[in-house]
Length: 277
Image (cartoon, rainbow, N blue to C red; front, side, top):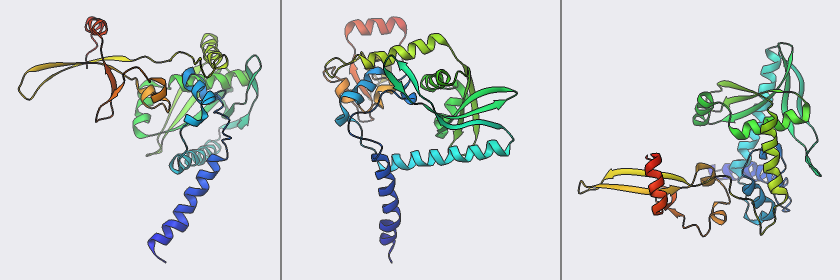
């Protein structure tokens, strides 16, 4: 047996099995936008997935493996909770709610714990070292907060937390929030935009181009300014960037930066507001 045989019969078969498992969850009828994990996301992104399934990214074996490892880590944390004597009231339970009239959602939350006599929804998120550091500094993302609000709506529990896990070190960090009715109304409004959308009438973009002005010296030691409107990071990592921004003159640099030159009016406004890099 050669190393190539081992690669084919071991790693190759594992990758194929994981990928087939992930593909079996998709039926080709469009990506279901009404999920807890979709709460707070750009409604245009969700509408693209609903109306144009052929444009959705095809899952890879790497993606399937990452999802599987995340599930395994969730199981490990459950064991840690029991080891610590923390009461688990519910674990990986699926609820059903009506997020909009006639639109059902089936959120599946990680845990409901009893902490100091109170029920708390806790959702675990595995993160890279960079993402974990950001989580420590700035707390949960808007999308994570939105997902927790869907869980709160389903359970009636108003105290919620994200438990972040550094995938590289195993370090834990938690961030806490409480139910906000106005924020829940905002989440519903985003889902409503998806519901009323059609293939020819998608929701407006949730994110806008951001001004970027950079001053630097050329090889001849002369000053030069760079005036650009750049795609926000949410759009750079979106699978529908190309069709969504088609016709907007977006260009891509060698380093992957996506932008278009500023108009004269945009330049004046950016200079006044101090949009420098």
